Every structure is written in structure tokens, then in C-alpha cells.
Length: 256
Image 1 (cartoon, rainbow, N blue to C red):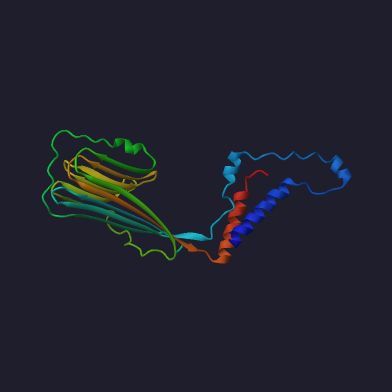
Image 2 (spheres, rainbow, N blue to C red):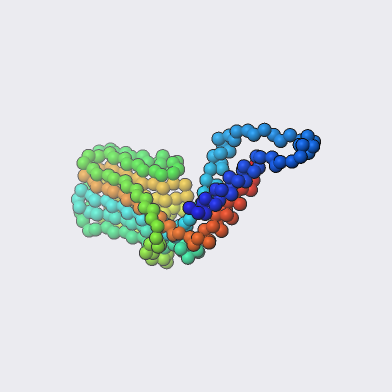
């Protein structure tokens, strides 16, 4: 709070001094050109300035993502895919940790749904931001999308294994398939059950999403996305230096 107060005070003083003319002699005032009158700052400019001088006293030490998708068919077969990603920033240089996993339990393959059932999720590819979708064309089904964000202060989380070898994991058995890994620039978990539908989770450049598509009966499907953010406090001297440097850099280009 001391660093924030210091920067706010410096910034306020600069703004005030810029709008107040310095005292001078009467003859100088008569010959000097008249300063422009004070005017109201429009909302658009205030919006651009908002937050420029408020810098937290912490840094991101760890950012982790965990995606787990599970499909339980009405015949007892379980299909699961998981993907854990960690970005360790505590040492200054980012380190990537990555762990994909898939499992398919042995069981009777789910029967193909009878009749004509159609689910079209192609429109989700045109949506940016956070996406959650559930499409069901059947009876007695359970579907759930869950997303959790946890922000805490402390040390970096226990890292998952570093990225090595294959960047994906896949399995297929009895008409069911599971895949976890990187596809087309996005981290993705995809489960498919023949004749019953599909579920997936992804994190891409422009969107984070969860999608469940069920075309059968008696299916239980869930997606769980967990985001973890760990912050560490900066040393007091480093914090003040960083805040002052950022405030000076952000002031450039602002008309006074």
C-alpha cells in the first residue's frame, strides 16, 4: 500500500501542477499568452487512464490448468480424459509442465441410440471467450459443465511432469475413444462414444470452452475445468522500483 500511495500521490501532483499556472509578475502576466481554461476530461479518456497508477505488490508465480472429462454409459463403460498444464513463473523464466492421460474401462459397449437424433455444435467454433454448452437428444441423461478459479498467495504449486515426448495421449476400445493433448493450437480433451455423442474441453488463443453433446439415453457426462493462480509478494525495494518505472512509462503519451 505504501508503493501504491506513493505513485498515486506523484501522479496527482503532476496533474495538479500541470493545470495551475506558476505565480509571476504583473507585467509578465500581461504580456504572456492566456492559458486555456480548464475543461472536463471525457469519459473515454478517463477510461484509458483508469488503473495506470495502481500496481499490485505481487507477481504471478504459478498458473495451472486442469481439465477432466468423464463419460459413463448406460452399459457401465467408463471413458475418461484429463489434461494438466502448469506455467511456473517463480524463477523468472517460464517453465511449462504438461501431463495428458486417458483411460477406458472394459465393459459392454453402449448400444447405438435408436431413431434419428441430430445434434449440431458447429456454431460453437464462431464464439470467443468462455463457452459452455450442453445439447441433449435423449432421455434419462445427466450432464454437467463446471469451471472453478482459485487465486491464492504463497509458493508455486507442486509442478506436474515437464513436457517430454508425445504431447498427446489417446485410447480406443469398444466404440469409445478418448484423446487429450494439443490440436490446432489448442489444448483439448475429447471423448467420443459411438452412437451416443461426444464431449470436449479446450483452451485456445481466443476461447475457453466446455461442450457436451448426448444423442443417447441413460448417459452420465461431466466436464470439470480448474484454473489455479498463485501470487508471490515482491520485495519492498523491487516493488517500489517496478511501480515507479511503470508509472513513468505509462505517463508518456498522455496529454496534460
